[in-house]
Image (cartoon, rainbow, N blue to C red; front, side, top):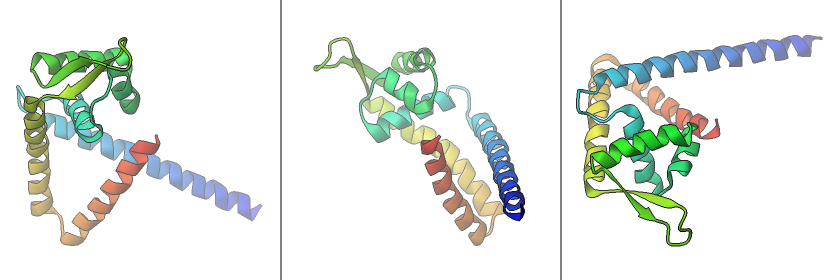
Length: 152
């Protein structure tokens, strides 16, 4: 019975951590969205561009799967990026039914500036309000969050 109580306490602690992560990451996401100025890329746009930058050319469906959203929602994001000439579409040479998305040179430039606006603001706050040890802890946590996101 003692093992069951220990297991239940551990399960509760893991659930509490999961809840704190959801709340904390959600708040961080909302605040970084507020950092974006009018005309800046939205978070979904930056996410799609970042995926294309990291993974290379892809389809709308593949991007949607990676972000766990509907292909229709990703299609809306991609259409807005196309209007800004940040993404181009090319027919798949191996399968004429598929369309491959790629970053344009403007897309590469935009992703760099979009990343830096948010990263610059976060860096200022870190430098002004956190100790070196806390920054190191956040760096380790960021790597774990990336891994957690890939596993979800």
